[in-house]
Amino acid sequence: MKLKQITPLILLTLAFFFWKCSNTEKGQVVKPNILFIMSDDHAYQAISAYGFGLNETPNIDRIAEEGAIFTRACVTNSLCAPSRAVLLTGKHSFINGKVDNVQTFDWNQDNFPKLLQANGYQTAMIGKIHLDGLPQGFDYSMVLPGQGQYYNPDFLINGERKRLEGYVTEIITDSALDWLKNKRDSSKPFCMLYHQKAPHRNWLPAAKYMNLYDDKTFELPESFFDDYEGRGSAAKEQEMEINRDMMWGHDFKLIVNPNGDSTNFVPDLKRMNEEQRAAWMAAYESENQEFLANMPQGVELAKWKFNRYIKDYLRCIKSVDDGVGQLLDYLDETGQAENTIVVYTSDQGFYLGEHGWFDKRFMYEESFRTPLVVRYPKEIKPKTEIGKLVQNLDFAPTFLDYAGITIPKEMQGESFRHLVSGETNEWRDAVYYTYYEYPAVHMVKRHYGIATERYKLIHFYYDVDEWELYDLEKDPHEMKNVYNDPAYAEVQKDLHKKLDETRKLYGDNDEYDQKYLKAYLDHEEKVKQRAANKK
Ligand code: SGN
Ligand code: CA
Image (cartoon, rainbow, N blue to C red):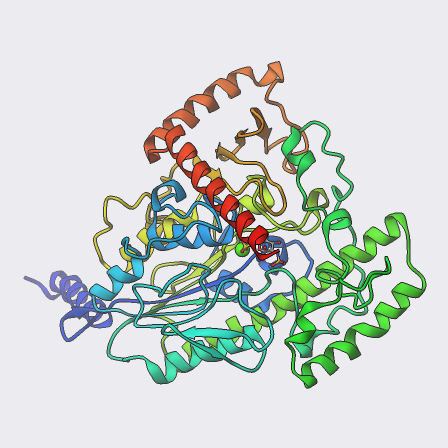
């Protein structure tokens, strides 16, 4: 063989050797670390990478710039605890059993951290989990009981309750860093669920951000005064309107109720220590007094309420974004950025005044979608944009795939590893959604449906029997239900067929609905009786 012929062969061998070395350690494939960051109720509209211009989130944006942003990531059930059960198990709510915030979650079923643990990972869960019982699948757990508190919160540290002084978002970040630096076995790859409580209602900011946005006025979204014409009774009968349903004390942080009775003060003030309370009073009280002295009316009052809400909401997000920055810096400083998959998402989306609303639950876009950005320099090109219908159902299989673990066939999601790396563009063309918590706070009716890239078909049931169909291309804000529009007769027929197929695919049926309805009503009855017995 001539040298000319041998050279490419040598180069190829050398390239393979170097590739092997970079991926192996003592002959073993190096498994990537997983840093799964999630916050609670973080609307994609409040992440600057999504381009809404509301606020700046430079650290979350960094993940998107150095990796991928998903523009149509969505959830299967837009509520906190169910969303967490889905992401852990990779199964729809009606299969994993945690359909609403009141049913108990069965920790004995399989979840992805258990599988990672069994395959050499060290796992930790730090922050909000909202699932009762000792979390299974974690070498270390430090979780808020239930919703948790913003100030001086209690934590369950490997099951033991302890009150920690400080602001919840900062405590969770410090504890995550502490686990990474000092507590874990660094000979093993890690998987850490770093899950913030913020920006969940009632949006209490850190003292240092209480005055952020003081000099700014946020404009009401276009659909703020939506009259819900053109949609069914569910949109009309909800109780999540900023202007009507938010509370003077709890949400707007007035210490004196403008209506005269004194029951509506900020309850959280009691939990704060003196220093925190002093910062709070200094930041809010003069504005409160001014408001009470010259109470605006009509549209001006709506604007005031919206601004109170959105400013506190965005202030909470500022601390969440700071924490993301600290974690990213830690990965950089310790040379782990290359080998760590970083995910930022929320348990669901949220309304920031669209349709006049706050909260979530509906299958309409703002709460159906959720933010998702992912960085993994080894496989994901910077500035990747993915518009496919990826769901929180897909997290468990995706993480297992990255870790080289066989995905159990019972898991219903799909790994998006090869979609986000650009290796394939093939993906599902419809996703399935269910929502069960009714009658309950915010009164969003029970519903299920499917979404395709262009359309959405929703069925509201239980105390109604109403169908809605939206054409997102023509009506991105879902203002007009075209279910009975003859121009959509074919589309409607196709979507019904698709919905039936999708329900079959995932194994959903009316029996599940009946079973969970009974469980829910039994629970409500017990709560009522308990309250009556107390009287
Ligand atoms: C609390 C909130 C509600 C919220 C639910 C569920 N009220 O009840 O506004 O919809 O949680 O949220 S508050 O008194 O806590 O402010 S979830 O994210 O946990 O599902
Ligand atoms: Ca939530």
